[in-house]
Length: 294
Image (tube, rainbow, N blue to C red; front, top):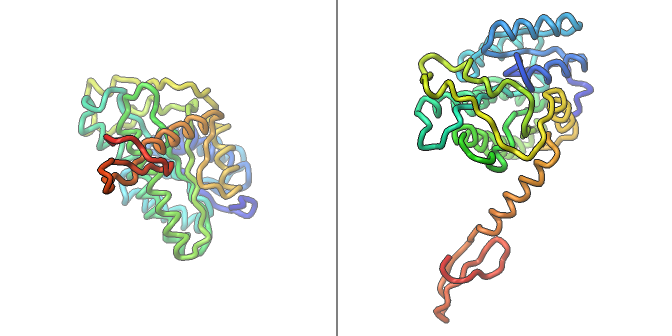
């Protein structure tokens, strides 16, 4: 999607990190921007800064895990600016850095409700208007955790939510293509970015808190260098402009992803059978026979 003619954008998770950087970049390009975040004070500060820079913005405190709240945000943006051209579903959280067997039900519910539920709610609220108009673009923030495991493990709910987001967006793209829709989809898979996501517990609902888990600050081991939120936002919008489905922001991430998919390809067994000779063989993705015992 060319952003040259785009007039209206929306950004969830707009009060900090990649969301704030996306909003600033979109305002700089002359777009009116609807801003959503659960943090009232920081969201108001971002809106004030962008208005001070001459931007037209609408800020709405929104819990993306609440479908009614996201629907109200979408209605407010439409009433103020019209149908969005670019929908950035960016809000995300990370839970405690502990093994899966120590993750509490509250951890799973919170992370999935924001990271996956927030995208589902955003699609439900904004996509129908884009389809009726017949144009627009979706930019959905996932993570390199959707492409390969975070080294050292320890955040299974986050990784599971981001894998789900990638699969969801792949399917949405196919559904749009099947009806001949020109609406584009880009999934942003940032690696390490200098944001406040490691402080995500500050926004954790009271009913989903646990004293031991919420004091755990995740730290991610990764060989990929950390980039700024501004760099991530610019690279994301460049991918949108180029019509790319998948956008990686950190150099080196593509190598990690390629290694992971190559390993999956080597291990993928399509069929195991026992021919008349009695020798059992497996046909693999490489179409080369495998030894017995697969």
